Image (cartoon, rainbow, N blue to C red; front, side, top):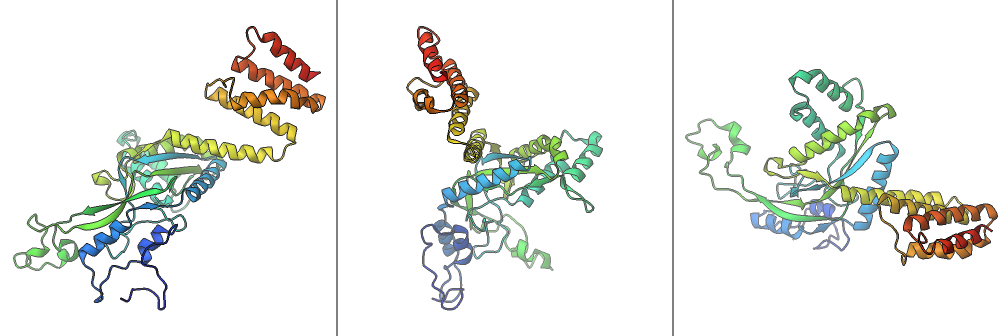
Length: 370
C-alpha cells in the first residue's frame, strides 16, 4: 500500500521505542486502504494505538527545571497544576481522524502554549472575575491594558508555555455529534423541508468521532513581570490564573469538565527544591573544600529547621558531622573555629548532649577549636 509520505520513505509500521509520539501521530498516519479511503473504525484504531504514555521522564524534568529557573530569575513565579480529569488542546487542528492535538515540538507531549495561558487569564479578568464588578469597571480596564497590553504597548507580564512535568498518559475518547450535515452544509439550506439531513435535529444518528486526550496531567505554569516594577501585581495575576483554571478550565471541551485544574503545592515544592539543590551545587563548585563542607552542613541544618524535623542520632547527616570532628582538626585555625561553632549548633538543635552528655559534647567541640 502507498502511504501519503515522501517517495522512497523508510517509515516503520509502528512507532520506534523512545520516539516522538506527536510526530508519529501527526505525520505517520497509515490507516488508509488501497483506494485512499478511510473507514471510521480505522480512525478509532489509530487513536487507540496511540493511547499510551508520551514523553521521556528525564527530558521533561530537565526542561521544566530550565523553565522554572528562567521564570524565577526573571522575578516570576512558577506553580504546578494538575487536571481533575481529561485535558485536550488543539482539537481543531487538521488531522485524518478529524481531531488533532497540540504537541510540543521537541518533548513530544501535549502542552498549553503561553498564548493560550494568557488568553485564559484575560478571559477571566475581562468577563468572569466577580471581584471586578460594574462598580470597578475602571480597574478592570486598567488590568486588561496593563497586564495584557494594548496596540501601543506590551503587557506587563510574560506568560510561559505550560509544560507537563512527567510523561503524559494518553487516552482514547470519543465525541458523538448528531446534527447531521448542519455544521458542514447548514449555511447552504434553500428549503429545509427537502433537506432534512442539513437541519440540526435530534432524529439524526450520532456519528462517533475518536480523539486523543491527556489523563490528569500535571503542568508547570509560569508568569514573570516584563519589568521589575511590575512584580508587585504578580500575586494578583497568579490568583487570576488559579481561579481561571479552577472555574473555566484550559484547552478544549471545558464545557464538559475538561481542563479544570487545581494547584499541586507538593509537586511545586519538589521542583523548587531541585532548583535550590542545583543552585547550591553551582555555588559549592566555586568554594574551597573546607568552605564546601561548611556550606553543605549549614544548608542541611537549615533544611531540617525549615521542615521542623530533628536529625536522628543514627542518620547519615549526624554520622558525617561526627566524622568532621576528627577530620576538621587538619584545617586552619580560622576554619576549625567555624566548624566547631556549626557542629555545636547542629548538636544543640538535634538534642544531642543537652543532658548527661553535655560535658562530652563540650570536650569534643573544644578539642576541635584547640
